[in-house]
Length: 196
Image (cartoon, rainbow, N blue to C red; front, side, top):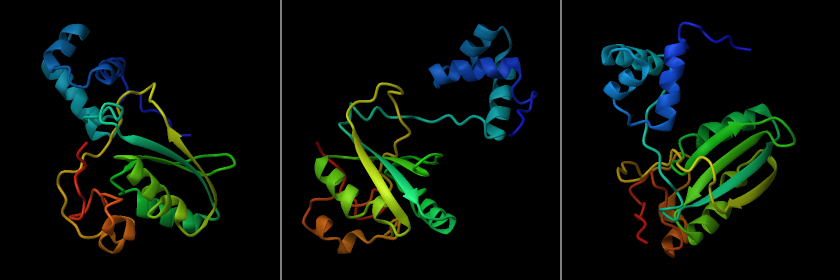
């Protein structure tokens, strides 16, 4: 088990983490006032937390308000080689919200989003993580409504640069994409921005 560096997680830094997890946009002056220290000290603590990898400040999105569909996939991967291959291919997937190893009957879990039901259907069958070689079995669940957290680190696709998907699929040759049933991969130039 990894030991926590007491200096990295001093009482002050723990308080800062608590404040920022409630409101990541809280300004340095307000945090400083709440803790009774200078805003310069708060910035120094936040910089150290970011530099150490403990903290990342980012914008998260409420998928319910954008009518995004969430899919939960449990997978049993047959061996470590296939596990590494699947993780390497899908950790860069723009629709991936969470990808983690787990212990139990299944050993990998993924939470992904889809812009609508057609994309959800295509994504859960055609270009799905669950169709990869080395998977013994899967279970798929469609999440109905988030209770907690309400906001997720969802990639919002506006800057599309590549012709290639992170998983190696080719949108341009996909029948679902050609028939306008799928919007394509958000990380590629083929992505058709969803309009509700």
